[in-house]
Length: 184
Image (cartoon, rainbow, N blue to C red; front, top):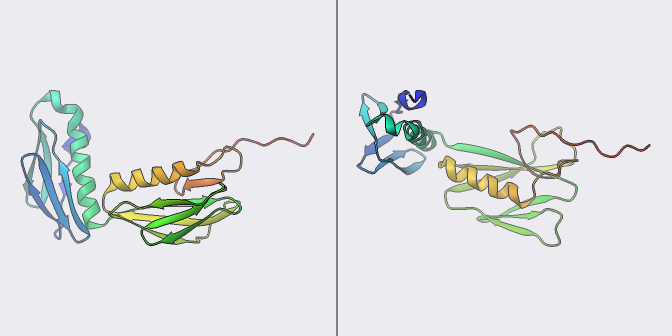
């Protein structure tokens, strides 16, 4: 029994939903997304409320996932998603150049990170209490999956180290660090 799959999705007034056989097309003020519908799950729209219905209990595993993907698409085209990434480390920096971000992350060469279509970025220096904090890269977009994958790829360029946390970090996560050597 899927509790998530049974929840009703409230569709905002400025969002249009077109239910097809294999996909749902969602259009809103921020853009347009198409979400595939898995076999065994169908959607019905009544009075601005969208509900996922499964054909049988054998589709219980995909029921909640299908509903969550459609809810994310509706939220994305109406309000959008934002992910903040902190660049931490002495000499580390990020520069926005057109559709790409050029990072200096302590390697012998700069790294050019090309942003995928549909993802935009801003670079700001926000008030943070992190040692060796340099800047924050603010990623935004309407596709939650693409935004999360872009943030993960950016994090992979230089993962935070275990002692000082130098690297590209997620701003909304707490990190635990190891203690360094003691001077005994």
